[in-house]
Length: 220
Image (cartoon, rainbow, N blue to C red; front, side, top):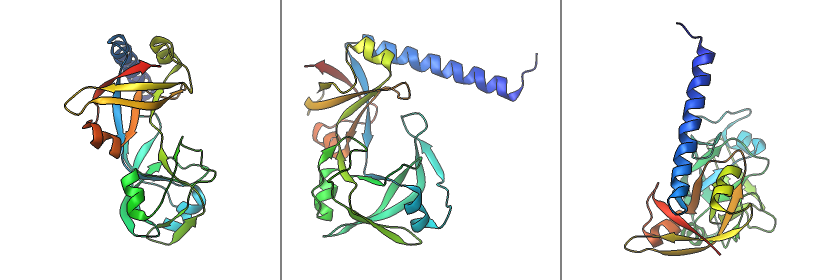
């Protein structure tokens, strides 16, 4: 029996979704376990700034998918320029956003001479700005630099299994030679999310956490 391309793609997608759901359910059964995604410094761009940095109507080039559905790392990078120094080759993440945002670890911020607050992605009011340089030009944003809060992405089904809700603060227990407890971890719930605990490179280094490592949610 022959199948057309659209049918094959649909069946493949359903199989992958079912396998992911089973994996997440099994992780959840194992004492509130969640996988870790370590987020290095990166930039989210709005269209106007992408045009200035790379040329009018430029399109980002797909490099690799990220853990959250629809999000990807682009091949393009930019230079971030602060009051003290600069950091070259900072990865751009897609798709484009309504407002440009630069996410740094505290060690990055100190190198640049910035003091960004810990914020949830998209909460940019009152944050410091920075200069971003691309191959075709540069832009200076007046605000938009943050240290991303520790957070766990999950679906509504995941939230029910874990007994948590959107916006709730939990702790996360890390096992290992330099294990410990990470406080002030925000639960983020959406149908569009996939199960993942996001931390920056500073947190990962401090606790010797590796990409994909499994940790434990501890409810307050």
